[in-house]
Length: 306
Image (cartoon, rainbow, N blue to C red; front, side, top):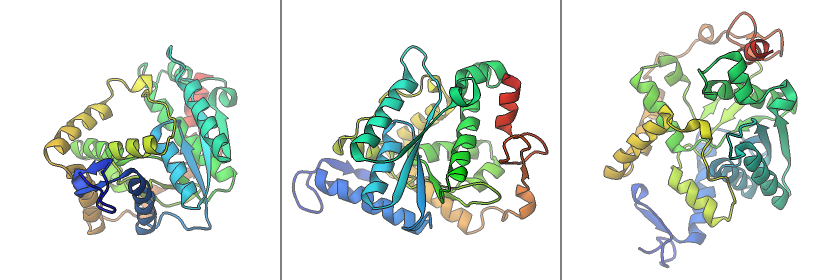
């Protein structure tokens, strides 16, 4: 297989794009495509400050690397979750994130959940008895709360996450199976800012897992290979495996599924959301927006755990 650009031996072959590239041209192609997606979905402009949520994994570190290469004002945010489970998962992901930022002279904000709130994510899950021993739901609530808080408090224009195509189609598949209309209506590459909520974007939403792995390896990005120990046996991983089987038989199926969904929404698949659908109030504890009348979900967890 030869590189489509220079004719040299290809390093990466993307069957769904019918495109093979050598290392050099692949490392040029990924940022070029990312810039195209940022523009296509109106994610952010060159003068806006971007906060990248980084976990130490390949996707978030690669995203930070790409935005830095493209010249954006991108700083990082690492959330210490206190997940150990015998392998020191959080400590290792923190080390790799700090190493990445230090080597490139990038600014990294670090928030340790246990230091901030007195309990790690596993402890909060256990104390609040939410998630029946699996802290994933507590983790999701905490990350959304803290990412929005830091972006708001430090004056960033946009919050970027490293969700890739595999992440997006797994969520889309789950929400389609249950026909969760509200969740389907909100699934977009961009969630616009409103009522104290930061704009959230996913610049890697059209790159597959393998494409981002190739980018990280070719760029020499050291990242944590282990998945979160609590993700083992999760529904999302099961859905990813099913979709990978489909992709193997029909290259491009995942990308088509996602892109056609976005196009269908644009063409009126769902009744347009109204202001009444998203009435938010201010949490009396932390001041962040909430859909309820009292405390937000995160403050409820903290109160119950205390």
